[in-house]
Structure formats: structure tokens, C-alpha cells
Amino acid sequence: MLKSKMIYQFVEQKLKSGLSARYIADILVLMKSMFRYASREYHIRNVMDGIIMPKCQKSETTIFSHEQQEILKSYITANQNLTTLGTALSLYTGVRIGELCALQWADIDLKKRILTVRKTIQRIQCPSGKRRTKLVITAPKSHSSCREIPIPECLCAMLAQFQTDQNIYLLSGKTKPVEPRTMQYRFSKVLNNANLPSVHYHALRHAFATNCVTLGFDVKTLSEILGHSSIELTLNRYVHSSMERKQSCMNLLSWSAA
Image (tube, rainbow, N blue to C red; front, side, top):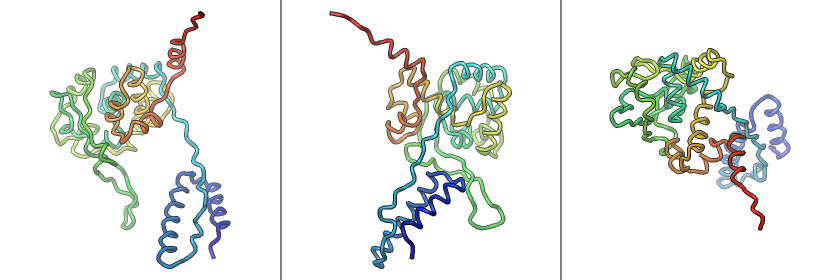
């Protein structure tokens, strides 16, 4: 008979094996759902009732400093190609790597200066067949992720330089897309060539959000540009205040003695 002690031993074993607390919590959510159904339909004791989820540690996000962003922009200016074009787009629009890889020139209107996000690319596991994984193009993960993003004027000239037929994917220059892990590899090479520390591609999205707040974007506008369902998600996950910003804000305080 399954007991609570056995559930916690399972959790401890999986944590020691290297699985993340978040991954294990997802497993427990599924188990809780199964036992609730068994309890309701077959009157089986719900052993999962009261089980405490493993605490998920919030990972520290590597943030590009202002100086590092300037070095990256200088490198992009001097080395313009499809990879650096994609990098610039993420840094100045906040698009996710999967959304970027799925962009075709039909999604970019340079006359109106609008970039439309309507699909994303990801590699998924194949439950059967010879191939273990496959690349799929789907709609974004939520309704709010489908969005129109105004293109900053500073990017228009670079985009126009590479613009081609509407059915061509922006990152590949072909009718076949570049997949996210390939773009991450190419981005790592860009960072190495620019003598910048290695970070995940998602750091560009964090940098975009933080820069927008520093420049005075209202959070509602920023949240919609990022494709979030709520402003709380934008603030909690993507907006980071630098020490320079904190000092600037603190210096607004004054002491006026009566």
C-alpha cells in the first residue's frame, strides 16, 4: 500500500538524482489529480492529500550590464548577418527565441513598422517512431502571446537590408526555419567573438524589459509587447533594477529640516 512516507522518499530520491524541484512538483500535481479521481470514483484513500510540494528555488537570471549591451550592439553593427539581425530583434522587441525562429518576412511590415507574432517553433519528444524528437511550428503558448509589436525605427534599415520573399524565414534566409537550439549556439558564438560572457538567449528578453522600464515605459504597454497575460508576470519575472537605477531612485530622496 502506498504511504505518505513513500511519496517523500520518492521526492528525495529524485532530487538527489538531479531533477529540479519544479519538475518533481509537476509529477506530484499529476499524481494528486489521479488520486483525487480514484478517491471520488472508487473511494480509494487519497494518500496524496496533504503532501507538501518541494520548494522551487528561484534561479538567478544573468543580466547584461549597460556596458555589455553597448559592446554587443557595436559587434552587431560591425558584423551584420542573419544571426546578428535576430539578436538585435530580440534585444529591441523582446521576442522569445521560438517566436524569432518562426518569423517569416510575411510577419514583418516595414511600411507600417509592425512585427506580428503568430507562431513559435519548438522541438518536442516523439512518443513513438524512429525519431526521438521533432521540430514543430505551432501557435504561441497563450492568446496574449499572439501580438503586434511596433518595430523601433533604429532597426528598420538593418531589416530592409535583408528583406526578401514573404515565405522566407528571417533567420535562415530559406523556406526552412532555423531551430531554437541552433540559434542559441550561434548566439553563443556571437558572445564569444565579442568577448562577452556566455548567457542563455533569454537574457536578451530580460534586457529588453529592464531597458524599457528604465526608459519610462508604462508596465501595461510593456506587458502587451512581451505577450504577457498580466503585468504582475512582467514585473516579477522580467524586470530587474540595476544598482545604478536603485542609486538614482534613492538620490531623489531629500532631507529638509523645518
